[in-house]
Amino acid sequence: MKIAFIGLGNMGAPMALNLTRAGHGVAGFDTAACPEGLDLAPSAAAAAADADVVITMLPNGDILRAVAAEVIPAMKPGAVFCDCSTVDVDSARAVADQARAAGLGALDAPVSGGIGGAQAGTLTFMVGGPDDAFATVKPLFDIMGQKAVHCGASGAGQAAKICNNMILGVTMIATCEAFALADKLGLDRQKMFDVVSTSSGYSWSMNAYCPAPGVGPASPADNGYKPGFAAELMLKDLNLSQAAAASAGADTPMGALARQLYDQFVTHEDGRGKDFSAMLPRFVEKNR
Ligand code: NAD
Image (cartoon, rainbow, N blue to C red; front, side):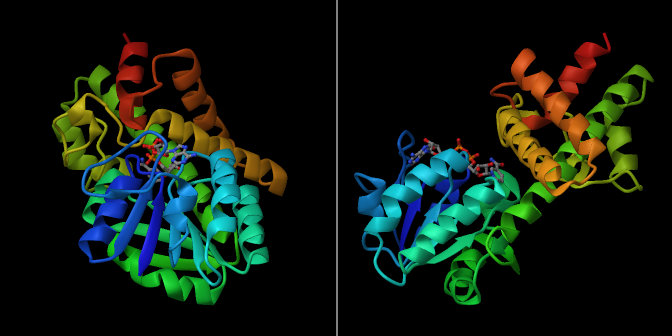
């Protein structure tokens, strides 16, 4: 299969590399990054012109809409536009409508699993869009990930993603504030991990992405809180889930508080450019 991969950042580059290693021809494009090991095209439209599947992995819905407006007219009939970014449901549906009107397949297929999952090819894809487009791209999901769940029509993948990440933001904050409390109580962090990771407080934030350096499996905490998954991307996702909750009339008080804390951290403190697990040193600082 010929693939165009647009957006070769922390997530996109390793995902594209896995497709290349599996023997697919991949033409990459990014406005800034130029990772090694990938064939790069001079523009997004040039990368997409010959592709059976165009995959995008971009920062937000506005950028996705701009890239889609350039790329969709350049794609060949019957090809599939597959967006793996995390964006608002409205942008996902607008891009899917545009692709369908141009005679293309379209999927929203955001991912979970972080850069570790992108590198290892163990992402989870949550996918919205028609059955035939899902069937076309499924072999690629199987290379880049360990699971692809077809969630429903266009936008259903993004709905699943923002619900998942609202849980993630809340559990990361809870894990960080609990570690900072444990510090104040004189409890050793390794002991805290040993207990919680096998007790009812366990979560992905604790067990797979522990925010305490030197504790649990390797995570951004062991690398000076370099992202990983940046705090501003978590804030973006919490803004998306709160906007979706407001428009759907859903009560999400924990999501609202998590959004407020990440906004404080990114906008008014020193969280920008740090991993979202850097909430732990933030709480430690507050507790001094
Ligand atoms: P990133 O900032 O590392 O990568 C985004 C890339 O898009 C950058 O290299 C940037 O130069 C490129 N880009 C921006 N505008 C472009 C344009 N017009 N044309 C082509 N390229 C353009 O971000 P990331 O961490 O790779 O995240 C990408 C998406 O994946 C986001 O939507 C994010 O929410 C989502 N996501 C990230 C993680 C994670 O752990 N990092 C996990 C799950 C989902």
